[in-house]
Image (tube, rainbow, N blue to C red; front, side):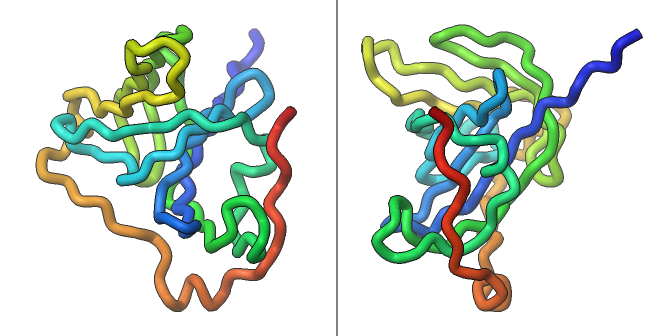
Length: 159
């Protein structure tokens, strides 16, 4: 019997012109990607805006570093969370999946805004045993961690 391959997810804390969190799900050989200005949450009452951005190469899942000035997204990038996920439903307008990360656990949904042609979605934590009402996001980038980062270009976006 063939063993199912675990799909990866990663959340990268990205200190670009504005702090945001890059939420990435492995699908069909690329990382489907959304920028989440306030970051993900474990609190089901905190719906988060998630703006879909271009797919990224799988190698981007391991990227930490400082994107050089003048480059797209210049600034520090660190992995905030990573792990595997199981898709439960996947359509053009809604995704549902279970995350198994170090921080993010349980069932989530990404739901596209109803306006046609928009890249805006909502990331919603479902009510389950991993939900934490009142949960607060704690950034991963400390002064010590930033000092240890190297300036390097990230892997390119997927075509």
